[in-house]
Length: 148
Image (cartoon, rainbow, N blue to C red; front, side):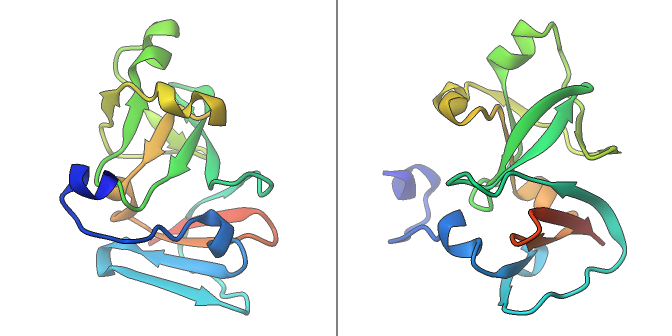
């Protein structure tokens, strides 16, 4: 049903359970994922963050208008989304997302993301952000780098 929703045919989703076994480089702009057995040093780091490696999904800490929050990295989503209810509950109108101490220059779409509440996530980082940076994931040190 997701395939029909987004208008792209696919038969499987390769998720965090698979990727967490490798160092992973994501170059969304070039449509390229590279899995490494050995560590690769990222260059020109924009932001470095630590994440919880014990979950079944890749979520990272972010802030929305300086309030701590969690986001899922979703390479299948073309846009970044923030939960509308989270904003209303915290008296926010326009969300400003930061990864580490760096502001992300993308205006997220506001949607109902209540289906993610069990995961303690209220933001989806999508392709509009991922195309701005390359991403390197070190699952062994629970570190993610956004770099130019």
